[in-house]
Image 1 (tube, one colour):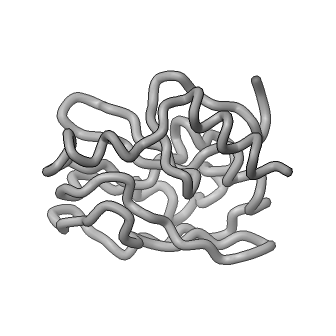
Image 2: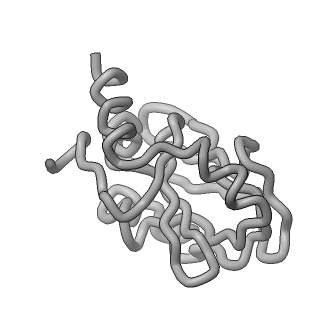
Length: 135
């Protein structure tokens, strides 16, 4: 699968088209290819959190702006922000170029992982959600 309907098996997803991927004791957060496709050319990533901040699942942590629209970014997990992808400040197009890798937004050390992980979608469920969203 490629393009807008591409889904990676090594991460979990939200219905808002964010992904989370375990990286040691942190979880990286980004947006999916479907979200990028819907947004178009990304012109600004504005993160409203800094390292050390607490973040709550399903709450906004920033916005992403494109030539088409402005969208909120929602945290898939609660926890502490451990890293921010500062490269996005000068190069928001990294999200367009590599939403699964270099375009990650924040890293979170989860506080309620077991309880919240159950609300995330696996790759199969997310692929179905994308299919429904496409119609």
